[in-house]
Length: 525
Image (cartoon, rainbow, N blue to C red; front, top):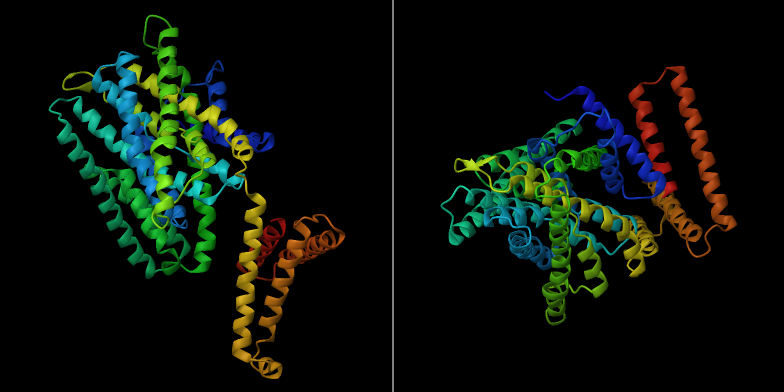
């Protein structure tokens, strides 16, 4: 039974540390991990053990599903070669190379060394994608990071399953490769099947609450079904999320899409925050089992494994990924070319997270009737890699993106204004085609208010461009923004008066408040 006080304490810590991260301008995953480390060493604070089942079955499915659902909005096709080579090729390369380091440097038996490699091979770039989004890095970097994280978690866990099975004996390389392929393809097939059923059901439903429930069913159902079949639950949740996301505009009304996004955003933030906090809280529990004759021996081994994980990613980026980018010159329609600056950011974004640690903690105590070899040592080494790749890169990634000239906040703002302006002009052009130049006919058809609406929208966009452009802060833009805020304030006061009168239905007032919130959010942007 979960301790209620512990759950309340975790939620309170997430809220306080998340607010602190915003106040000091640091990535929230870093603040949560460091905060968990500090909380864990406070005398009297109860130990909070990270339950692998909680991560793998309770928290991971909705996180993976939500991420893949959002990733479906990217145009991933130009980045598919890079995503696949990173999510499969780099995972296998890192697994093998880290296993060598684990065996020859840390002295792990081969089975334990391969388990270590499988656990630290997949990345968890929640922090990286959040940071590069905030500084406006090129979309293809974000798309590659998102796509890599969605696929390599599944391939990494599939490799982990194979490695753990090898500890029980009866393992061969050929059998391991076949099992790896079966686990991966089976997970994808099950996820697509579950996603297809959810799409069919949601086409017949237009209700926010039911569609959210169906989304959770898709997340947990695809993951659980794949795990029960001995396949990759992560890849199943990825496939389900991508399939449902690709059909989102066909199966949901705009109102449902608009109102469901905050739910998934809040759920993802909460689950990610709890995971990062739990990573920090595990330090003392894992440090108690430090292997070796002295504390310095495992620390040195951990430094070697950490250095290998970081350097291997950079080596891959500037050899295989660089060659793949150069191939894009000859076949530009098939392979997207990445520049050295982008390869550097991708190389520095190889953060490991809760999935690696949960996998380490789920290593069985016994294998083939004997104690699993070097289990405590593997857990400590995985934890060291998670801490090392989370804290240092996340604190420096934003500065690196800016130093390399990849921050594009102003460029993205200009592109957004251009897109909105073109959409509004397209509507006005279509209105002209419907009515021609006969304004009397337009008035008789009741279309005059539509023209006024879109002309006002264009005027706001042009004023916003003028106010936020190179001449930011000029008197015209300031007066316009100030006047709009005054009008919104008057509208809100009128709404409060209607609430006080208690004459209109609360759901009517809630709908009006929702529209005012949308207007104010647009003004703040």
